[in-house]
Length: 107
Image (cartoon, rainbow, N blue to C red; front, side, top):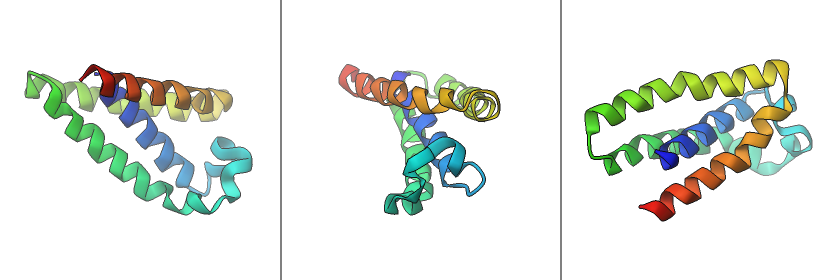
């Protein structure tokens, strides 16, 4: 579960960071880096990896339902964070990365 949550949040953050409208809020001084052009590709790959991480779950049906439920929850964290507290989505990125690493180590 930790792996799926971490990958899914990082995917949504990368996809939002690639959009011209959200880039200044999410990336701040990083928005002029050359790798920003690849954020969309990375976001879709992370989204696919989060979906593939469901194969590690014992019950595939419940895993898919949890993944579908996590999409709007984590999307709301990114979206509402950008709207009301722009620092929140940026500070959750290291937490999501730590969850991803912890999920990989727990496997």
